Image 1 (spheres, helix red, strand yellow):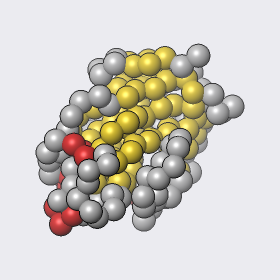
Image 2 (cartoon, rainbow, N blue to C red):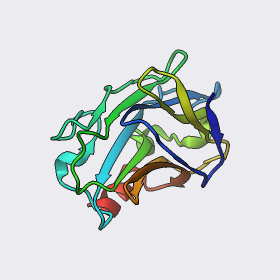
Image 3 (tube, helix red, strand yellow):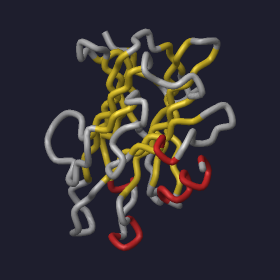
Length: 183
């Protein structure tokens, strides 16, 4: 049975291989332009910086050099049930310098499309074990009315144990904020 997390809650991930699923729906009253949300993953070291440019995983770089983190590809609409995008993680392959994996979702071309997370509903991040059973889930219930990027969660290593933290922090500067923060 899955653990439903609250913002800031942390839980151990007791699986060397797992999938991070992200999902969302758009509100019925939108801007008339389709929504394209993008999942990005930042694999960081002790200094809270990307291990390399190749450790920034997104729709144009689907895999880390060690193959430990792999993006399922860009979902341009978010239509349908279930996860809109997934990230596969294999901790047995991850380099020893990696201590954190941050998962961020951004609204693509938000300024030109006049879109933000206030127009999104039913947002969540979840962790599935190797048998595709949901073990952790965090549903974003806040109204991010001006934010165009949200750090959904992070996986971090502490005392040789990997844990998941439900973050749920929004930024109005989009992906650029996180690129500057982690580069």
